[in-house]
Length: 228
Image (tube, rainbow, N blue to C red; front, side, top):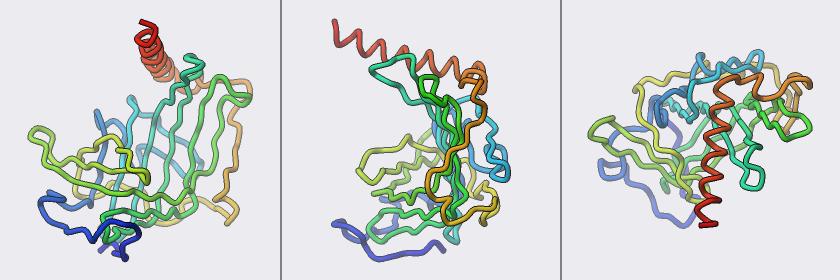
């Protein structure tokens, strides 16, 4: 079973029942169109590469004995520079604890990594280590009438993550051990430029263009509404 620790903040002990959680958290979960999933189809830690999904999203997997894996793919808009859309794709795994106050603590194994594409940066495309300890303030699982079990997670500051739906009760994950050679210093950000002559649109192709246009459209729409 996943480890249970003492409460870490002002909230009281959690009661694991159907009111709080309609099912257990174990298995694989994915947001939105469920195009992003953990496992071998998303990342290859051995050579720090990714298989780009058709859509953005997040996916979390949890084993019953305390291991987790996260896959993320997102675009970040820039309100001051609508055309400077940053694309980030990342993978990390490690061990987790279900705290008695209803929170979740996640400790990475040290071999996580992410790729960042920023057309407005001096280095527009690079890969760096990603090994941050993560703390989630709370989580809930509800029964959706059409899509089944739905997981809600809340970041350390209480902000909600995108809701995720259960893909399987058996977690779809890479092996729960270090999957590339790392040193203790690897936990610090260490960037590796992929190709100084290439930009993000060349790496991601049509998906980058669509993502940039969509994000830029949202920013421009928001600006227009403020002006009007």
